[in-house]
Image (tube, rainbow, N blue to C red; front, side, top):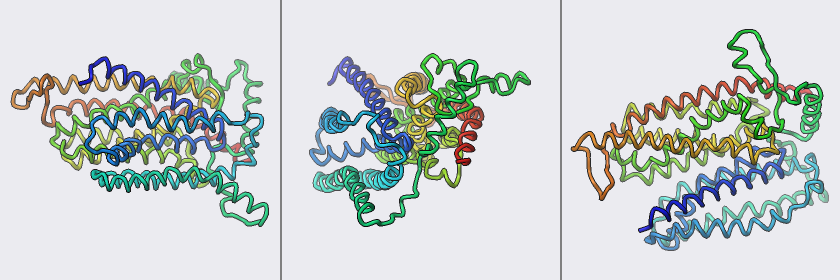
Length: 460
């Protein structure tokens, strides 16, 4: 048996590694794909949702009965993949030698469209077929197919360069030339720079915030220093002084983070409600819905030319299913209610995790993302601790209150029945409602900035 100190050290190192790894990925996406950063971030983050299915598939293909193989794979696979990815990262040309955005924007749009399709196919493959991988022979066949799907994106650069060669030499016309799913197009980048310069030169305090309406106490409080344009860089000190940031922080804390706490307690929830035998299917359901929720974060960019809506508005809409799911669980402990709620929470939290990086870069500046987003996600350990503590207190209190519902396994006490999590679901539902209100307040405050940017885009 592992000692507590060993498990604590492992969790500490893993948590620090995740923060560093995610930050590097975010910065690389934003710097290398400024015109398609939302799509690149969505694709990068979405694969976190199927990593558990991939590791399970590898473990089943090697030795399904091993208890330590999964942990060994978690230590080895990230090390190998990071080592391979390090080579192209270090060989990047300096930023001044990169091809201008207007020369690559069409090519990137085509590439991201293909990558998005491959991501959907890979996710469906890993999630839907993972339940068939219990036998080693079948798992090896499925693993071979998964490897092919994961390697296919590496072939895209060759396909893209072949396409460009064909265009230059054969003068073929491809239907993808007009596609562009980016928030910032090439002409818009120049306009955006001019707007930033104009705002900075005309603002007396050196920033693009101001009191919009000074009539009425409520308007003064609600519209104080409201964001008026996108993309201005914020230092950490400026960030924590903005009302928009704290509304954003509360929306994330009471929305996306509460989904993490739910997933952490999913095994115990299923056990208390009498559905522990189907825990694997619940975990797979949450993982798959989280994956597709992360992919859905790119929907505003695909739909932009048809339906334009501020990204903070999409965030508010994405948080609507979370309180519905918790109140549904409070109302019913049936298997159907548990499945529906798990799916809703997975979709909602997955969307928040993926969209949050793009929102942070748009509201508070892309160059400051490495610092600002890490300040934002301090809500994850804080929320996980508080929500987990709340669930533990309610769980233990009901386990101790009735000897008929109390069992002992060593020193672990098990609570059975709906009452074990009923109060927790009600509390979590009310907290998620607070996050929903905060997200709509953020949308109301930032909508003028997004509308202004869209008007400027339409004038081009």
